[in-house]
Amino acid sequence: MPHIHELYDFAVSIFVVYKDKVLLVHHPRYQKWLNVGGHVELDEDPEQTIYREVAEETGLKVRLLTDKPAYEDSTVKALPTPNYMDSHEANAPHRHIGLVYFCVAENNNAQLSDEHLDMRWLSDADLDAPEYHLSESLKFYAREALKLANKH
Image (cartoon, rainbow, N blue to C red; front, side, top):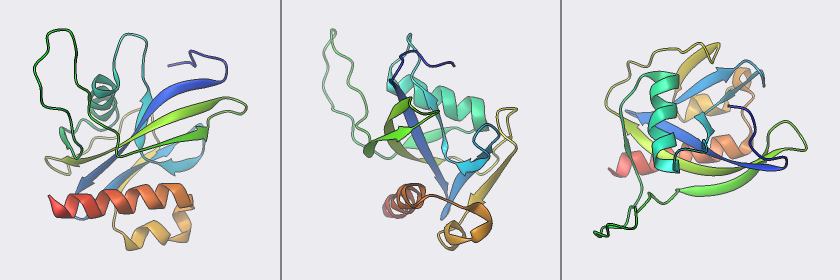
């Protein structure tokens, strides 16, 4: 989806874990390894974006590793709390407000979409491999997702 606003758009950053590995995709526009994710579109909320992006980019079904308020109110939809939030560059000077979510996949049968060049399940040790050139923020989030998934 193209940018909605000139300076900032909301986007979800999703770290998918399966059995001590995190899924990364090789993004053709940025020519680097990234997590799954994308823009929150005008007709959806962040929770809908999470499931849409994971399905579009991987074909996986996932379970979120975060809290969601438990109440019933016909006028309010409770949304899952991001595990983290950040602001990051996306085609400068444009930036994304990143809603970072961790989740666990039902299986590791991810299907490569036409949005990416490659995908890999990486272990904690793989995150430091020089061939991936991962940013410190991506490694931080990936490791936090792995830790949280191991607790569940």
